[in-house]
Image (cartoon, rainbow, N blue to C red; front, side):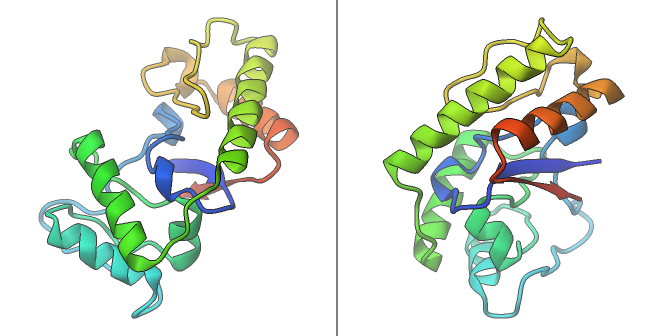
Length: 168
């Protein structure tokens, strides 16, 4: 299962900030031999964003407009994270996606700190410290355990109720 979790509100400024690794890793939805496909409405924000990203050389699928607004679009596994993030933010701005304000970002920081603490308190005390406003379990060896997925989902529901999960 590949999932990305982010708040429902607009998250263009932090395109890769909420990467949940192992069972939640961001991966490409298409390989080099297949052309990206559109999952968004024709002519919508997602299609505009996808065109912009492909023009920049990234092999991406069009996110739906809702995915784009929430920042839950997919990054190619082989993409340079910094370059992808910068271009994704530029394409989001070009498409007219509004950025989160400072108070919303502070709320996410508080929520995700509570989520990480909750995960540690529920049997995963070796979970590394997380950067402010980020949940990044990539490289955490226990992230592949079914119990980790259950605990992280429970903690997200309790402390970050405005978070959604996107399964691919």
